[in-house]
Image (tube, rainbow, N blue to C red; front, side):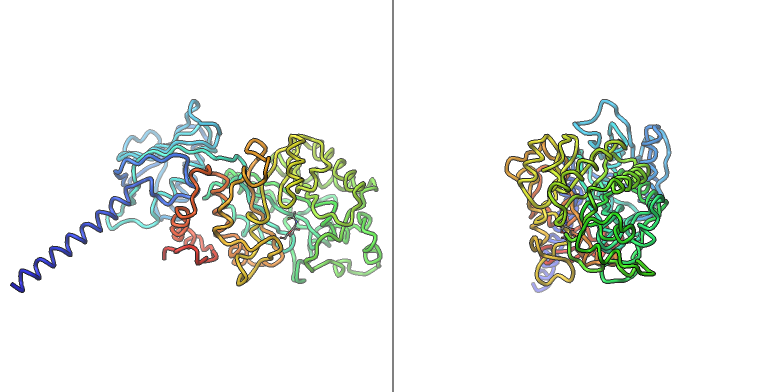
Length: 526
Ligand code: TNX
């Protein structure tokens, strides 16, 4: 009797165990519950498995740019998954096809289709950019670790995907604190993984000038010397900057250089005092000193500096700076800042923005400015980056300009998560992970709809952070959510569903050694 009871028990446990393992099994073969960020437009699951193993090969459609995408995938699989997947054209079975299909493409050249069946994984896109976005999806579908049979199981089905916005960016402030190019490369790696496509570099501010300008060498020799807090600063040589641009391009990311003016220019005016237009500090700047670098500003106040908008030499300077940077920048944009010019008179500010606009156009770039420039700029081709004043965004819309949505209360990565945050400011808000995720660009400012919006950007100001880990504490995980806000349509976004997908990013984040902030709102997978 006792024996049969025990047997029954064992049977019961076995049934339950099988039940659980079946559930797990079916979960792992359900493409629609894959932990993808950003969530794709459409997923159809077919509940079977593709078994990726060391015999799997990548085949591209011959086009050199598509081949590069295949090589990128192979590189990443070898680096992250310790998998040696070779490129072998015209393979038929156990293959990842990356195919150029001119007729294919939804509305954007970032669109793609990804079909997984038992024999093959097939990616179709009309451009290499689309294929590149597709392989990020695929990377997220392939487990980092193999099962005991040496296989990585990818669930079968079909994904049809395209971005809601063509501009999905993040900004690094390398002026308040300087971050070496290696930190920027690491940031680019993760941006690309989450399908972001714009890196905005804030290259100058009161505390430092961070890009070499050959015709004005003291900008960096003097102006790059220090940073907030007074430690050594730094700057990118033109070669460094080109390396960043090329590294970004390899990841299908456009670099936007920003030289903030006419305010936020104290460091430039210390280097070249005749640029200075702020009455108050002239005395200080004119003070003869053997080492001008000792005059640099290392605090975090804003709004006290300005260029002299009425001197022609100021525009000769701006012309050289825009020319040299534009020559190094393949992307279509030049960001002129334009924010918080509190000591520039309205007349001078307006005159300055117009003159800089002419220079930027002369070098075939499209001008971007923080939302304050909307009042002045008349060029409908200019872009306004909304961060603060809704009226400025509306003005931009009325002038036919496109708007980048960076509302400080949602998208500012430098805001503290809560009162306990180790780093960050909180002038705009405390921004917990859910708050930074739960917003819709086309609904944020009344009257500004999707057609007025170029895209979304998450700026990371660096007054309170000086090391990679600190940068990562503020950026992650919020920047991942902003990537989804920019890519995925509102109907597909849902916090409860997102927080599970986010919790499952840990294998990638850990492997990348990204020190994310472990928000308690997310049940992080160990
Ligand atoms: C406002 S946003 C600024 C920056 C600061 C930031 C700090 C903007 C265009 N200007 O100068 O770094 O706040 O959150």
